[in-house]
Image 1 (tube, rainbow, N blue to C red):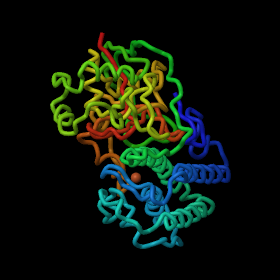
Image 2: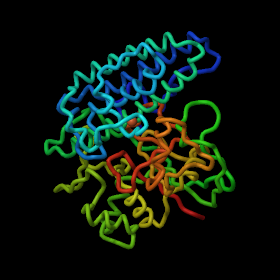
Image 3: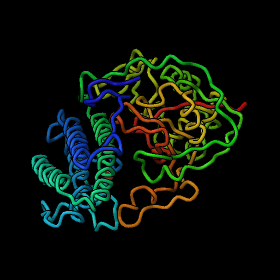
Image 4: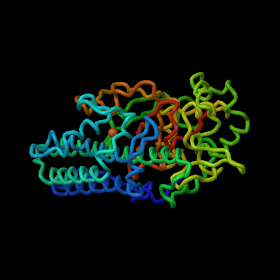
Length: 420
Ligand SMILES: [Fe+2]
């Protein structure tokens, strides 16, 4: 399943950020990074383009950030971790910006409170555009002029910055969807947006059992949390080829799933009671059925589409209702590597029953960049795959996404597993 009209590159297309091989000349390497930088930066602007300055200002909850902040924060990342340490001639665009646009990097200095990002009416969206242009120019210059001895280090930080910006491209969409969902006029982000048909594979597939390797190994970029590759023991089990659909979820609702405490983890049941959940995020009961908020505005729930905007608690309760389990992240990855999963990527992130923990032997990088992943390895659950909002080429078999169990503003869905 793929979506339309968000990214400039079709989902599933092979898009390498940077040089395609290690055989390229230094000039070709520079040109490849230059092009990758231009392309990723342009994608962010393309995603922001349908949004007015007022849209870009809004912060609808503490977990979400304004579009304007995303555009500035990813720019701050390049300024802080790439330009300031590696370009002595770089001049900071505005000395006030690091405080405003540092997210959580304690080692990079003090920062504005996350829940109050929506209160920053100035700098304006135009100011942020000028900040982006200033940093774009400086990064392009650095790519062209970096000394050969420093090139490997500079390009490796550039690469992290590009993947970081891609992560924020996804958040830009999920955050504005949440904001638009609070608006009684049901704003449309992209009138052309739609789900395409899900993969037709149904049923369950046996996952290769025994000792299996997961994690990132070999060439190509990965985040540190995907390493080291290591062995996991896979039991006799089967995994669903398809994602749980809205039709499946309607059965859960009809059967009183949200009113049956025995289906829920204790924390989940508390959450359901406190939040009054009776359906996935954005669902609303209408006279003729259910509607949901989408990037194309409010639409009828499509029974054939995968369920999305469900929390870990809901995913777990649904699995119990179905007499199944959620897969572990190791089971998911082994199955994906074996080509057993329909809609593994580009549709909905899939909750796993795995807590987000360091792999055996994991070490975070030194310095402020070491805060990227490692310090979040507590109290969150791993999601695998990628979603309809993930930029093309960002997905990987070893990719580990993670959110707190109640979170449901991402395109998060469900794949079931069973033990045999
Ligand atoms: Fe970030």
